Image 1: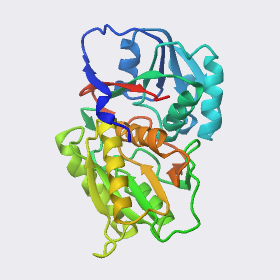
Image 2: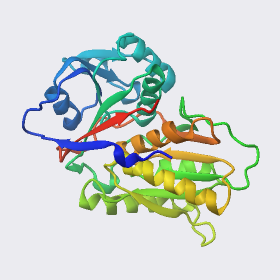
Image 3: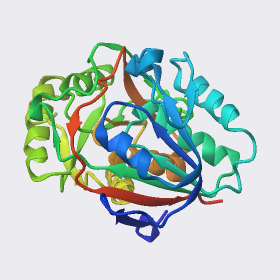
Length: 317
């Protein structure tokens, strides 16, 4: 069992200069100030913009700074493979920083999977909290037209044909339609929702609950089938990973899980926590990461920067 409390995190100043210096800095472009301002602040020998097709930017709208990686691949596995080829082979001994703020979750998850597979030992990870979401509880991060619910590249488990005690753990975010689609796809699973508490900002927890409740029909509302609620900080991937591990062990003690499905639909730090839990604890088991893949994603959803987090991710041998 991994002890996630050993991992290091701190905050970086939003207004002052940073002492940190990296060889490679990677950020996924969108129109949010909290993505662009942090890109400008970061000190790195090479700074890369990843242009994800899901944001549907025209070439004239690409950023003018940095090295730009563009691909029409909509499959996250093929996209990230192309990006790592674009980076080149000499990355293992480099000091790498990844800003996950603008990354769409499946691309982010697959990036960490492939970096670990390449033998990268350590990565600094940044995440900028927003001051607020522009439309509060009505904020939508995707167009919510779900093409398919499927496993994420690199996170596909060896599943059992016995399904009598299948479990779905959802990181419950703002997009209630996405929660509903995942819940319907795994209709026969016992369901658990992980909420972000403490939330990024005090009002965001209530906004989150209001949205997640819209998916109650798909999740099951009768007393015998109501989803369990668990909590992990919205800004702490390490506590999230620890919480997932505790849930997994607790459920297995009650009754052996036949198949486990994970679906991170909340904040990027929580999604990183789901990713770390899977990479450190779940590979080769009857556990998969599933995600509702949409046609497009919102180019900006927030105003301002509240805090900038730095997480130090070390991959075990």
